Length: 255
Image (cartoon, rainbow, N blue to C red; front, side):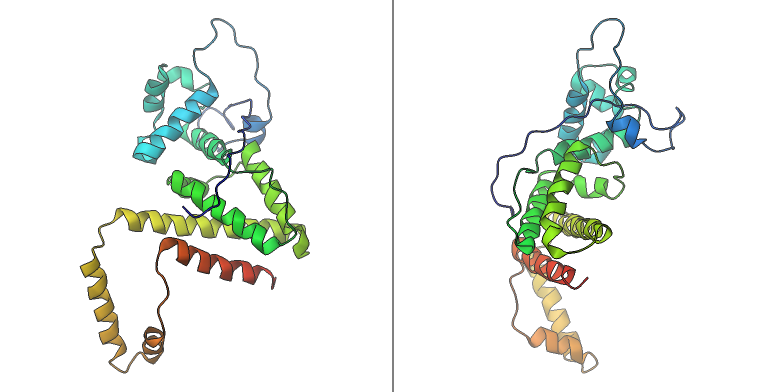
């Protein structure tokens, strides 16, 4: 795993899960209702489960079986509740995914002070993000539609923005830089996980290399021939991630 070892930060659990928009679904999650509206007292017997337990159960299912396994029925069974009782905590899967993404973001360290070397700080942040996504391979897909940053996500964003202060970028550019960095990490990890899960025996890799060499020798692809003639570089996921990351971060300085 690529990131430096660290002690996970304490998760900051938000206090509310309410439906965004009306009860018909499809209106999206209202971030203010989701993260800022305080809980209201409930009448009757106190529930035997909590929103954190529901979210943790959903995360465990996704880690073990993928996002398709995360249904309200399965999550309810995991916490020993009726399906209908879950809806006051997470009225739909979209809301549950928002809770899951912020829940695992609590594993990212947020109390690391900037060193003043923004390149080094951003590289550390990216490696931590990669390690998180490798622990939770469903997270890159979820981030593609994740629109309501909760307290854990915001705490990590605050750290990233502090790291970017020495760049002199304006506010919008800082947000764009962090979004670009996160998108790169998510895309790389998605490819990495897919590649690791697919059968790609050494003999197939050798066959692909022979094919490219044959194509390069036909005289119609001089640029490819030149590239293939150059010394190779390590193809291990860690080494490739570091090379790509270095190029990305070097490019940020030219904004």
